[in-house]
Length: 137
Image (cartoon, rainbow, N blue to C red; front, side, top):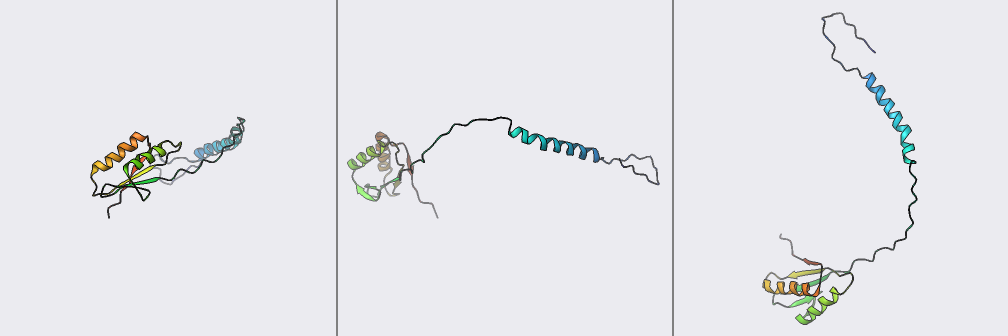
């Protein structure tokens, strides 16, 4: 330990922290961790099961359903009527992996037409419906 001797002894106490014991403790802890870490890694042996997994098939492509300004329907940009719409909705609802239905309603169309499409999709059993809008500039 270092002792500081001064020429003027005013009787004041030195309030400095002695760092040497702290450094000694830290070095001992470092050595203990260096020794015990390799032991901890090999302490538990686990035999994991073997499994082979096939990659998942790609997700189905989304179906774009548009309600035009005049109230008509377009299925992936192909014009269809109401009965063909219900039939196609039932076809995609019957699939194991249903494609998502992206619904685009023209801003000039009455909301009732969009609500009718939503009701038809619900009756058919379509589980994933998304509304597509354009961002405002």
